[in-house]
Length: 212
Image (cartoon, rainbow, N blue to C red; front, top):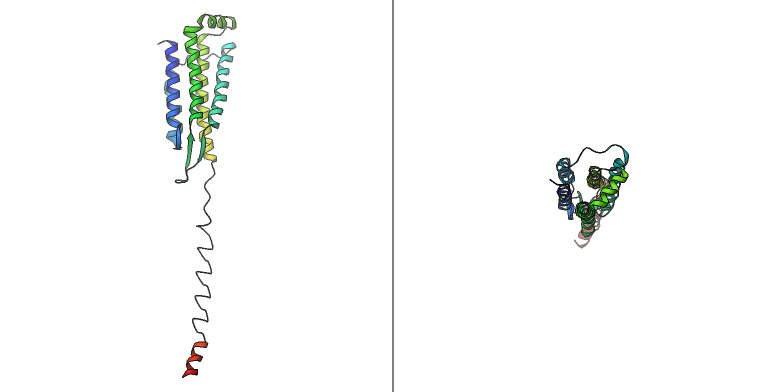
């Protein structure tokens, strides 16, 4: 399998898993939802990830991929709204066109670079790699690390925001409101119970004796 095919499989898996999990409104946030995309990435990427470079400019390329993934992950996290459902009171999320557009743009950019490295500018890329002592595997690893970091930041941000989402406060008009519970106008009110005008009023027997 060519490196281009590998890159396309990784890009397609990340994009599909993320948008299928996040796109839409009132999406329930649970363990399965949160872990679905990282599990897909964890299942696919090790098939194509070579041994990472641990020194020299190759390491810098991989760290650059991590940094770009971190930045992109923070951007998409801000484009997803997390709130508590008014029906269930549990955390839910909503993500629309801006969220999907950023993901598609990032994945398309990675795909375009992979295609370009094979068909558009292979000679120029080979010269750059030779001049800077960077292997093609290091560049591939950098793109994969970018995808992994972006997914992890999205997952961590979604989980943290769901945990920090404030609970819906109870409505004082229906609970603990003196107008509905313990209100003297409905319970223990002297106008309806123990009122001398309706019970034990001496004016009533006096009137009877007077007319008798």
